[in-house]
Length: 113
Length: 110
Image (cartoon, rainbow over all chains, first blue to last red; front, side, top):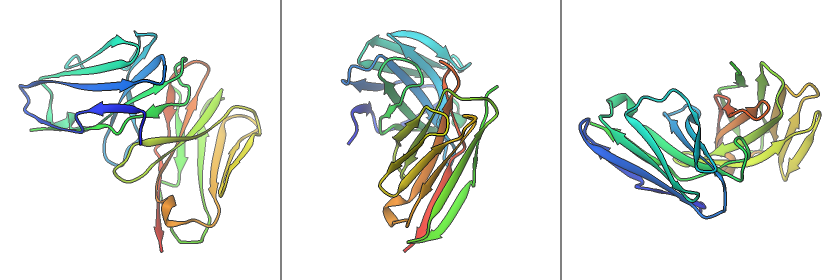
């Protein structure tokens, strides 16, 4: 059971599609994260929001666009993705400061055709 | 930049044997965290170590943080099939982001 909910669990999209990944937590956490994870690799940080403001962008290509509408929600908008973007996308949250112990969602398994 | 090296990359043991994974950082850390990811699952937080020389235990798991706060280990005594998964350490320097090690994938022969 996870307290961080991600939807959808699976997503298949073409390179010209636009889609969004969603993440929700109700633990009152104020830091939220997007990670990308390839098979047999560690999670790779993409973005961090702290108190609903973007605090870290790990030089992610602009085809990935994060959004934090409020303290409980985190979105990742996808457009014109490449096949190498196929991966597991994990959302996580932590209490307040960046780097505090993180609660991960189950992830969205993304396949780009 | 900050790097966290983790060894071994893979470990296969017989059920009941012990298991240890090691993490080493190129810089002094403010804290180190350990996560477990089951096959097909997501990382789950296990523990955070903050103090120099700290040792913490969770049942059969023992976590250590080195005196210089640059290395850490996770030791599992008498492994069980439920211990299967990939164990990641993740270090933080100051208020910066967590940096994950490459992980140690543990498989167990029942």
